[in-house]
Length: 595
Image (cartoon, rainbow, N blue to C red; front, top):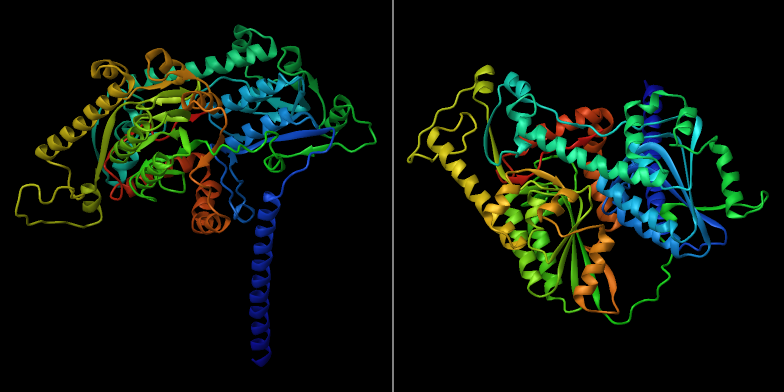
């Protein structure tokens, strides 16, 4: 027994000591990573910017200290990619860009369009762009098509098949578990409610999805046609062939690819076009290092600031009260209002670019942010730059800006309001639970989830939603200089692309955040200025603490549940969180999944 106890004690002690050592090694690794990320990168002669297209792209990067533990990748900041491409263009020691694709890029088409255009602008410097992949997915090939030389592994595949948008429906599932959903909405095209009340797209929803998917594809295929000197008709024919099923050589024959080459031979090719001897080293600078390359322009001494305020994610009343569940980025109404008030009262800030990347959310929080934007606009120019989404509540907070700039592939509009109220009457009967009530007034038990609403409650709820829609129309009409009737004709919850919205007068200019900055600078009337991003990025410790609290949930949802089950979980999380969020929502469909 003594030997057993000794052995057990020694084993436990060893586990504890090893755990402590791993903990401190992890901390040292974390802080070492932070220290290295903050050091300035020196660019030597004949360098190549190696842009690895993998991971998910968001407007601003968010470091995940637990990535090495959970196996998740850090998100890539679109701002970092665009600024790094610009620095590579301006730095005389950088000879070109090497685009590496790994078949794992997760990005929406507005972000892809912004990167595509930055690469096209880079080529004006006369420097080269070379792209290589073992296998290209369509989004990666869209960017690679800009390159002077597009390379593919001799045993690789290229996906070129067009765009599909898939919806998932849960009505039958909810009925089986005894959950009912009561829907209140305004807008023929307001399709965010459909997964809970039907098992297929409505005709109106199919109409709008067909229109905006076709608009996005037209932008993509036109760009690739220009890049590869092919016709749109040829590219559509190739999409119908499903090129990923054909041998790699077929991609050369049809003009999608220039060269078949193994990855370990690409470096020799890069040396050749960079003018580097075979025996010399090729200095490859990755994105993490490129972010820390010093900008060429001198520091501005004027004190004038052009502010870029990032509003990304679902619009919520309070932090954490998400209808989506999980750890998605959020636009927290009260926090944004405080931040915008500070910018309003800062005399050094001469103009504000409000970068909106949101599918919407709480109608109440959207109204509060709209008011803050209106007050800010009264003192200085406000230019909205739309990202992947600026729809429903995202459009609500944008509509009163001086100028609205959108990418051609931005999803915007979705001017409409809805409410979802679940009830579990059938579920309680299934599990043998009953509820009874005594009340002093007719509506004292309003919101009781054990029963559906009665007709009087439904009428009041619908009237509330309709008042919200009328206010939404008023805000858009005032901001865009139109009548409410005109806005209603393009409203009704319908989603548009940026290209379509330009024709309808919902946006003013097509372009990216650089276009919005140029307009802001012109309206500010300043020649000397600095550009500053708001709100301030979170510290390493703050990010670590958040990652610790969310790491297990992220791991389960992304690694264990898988992509499709993760999509389902978002909808189910939404139902679970309905008692915590504002029941009246101004947002587009919860998930827009492009394949």
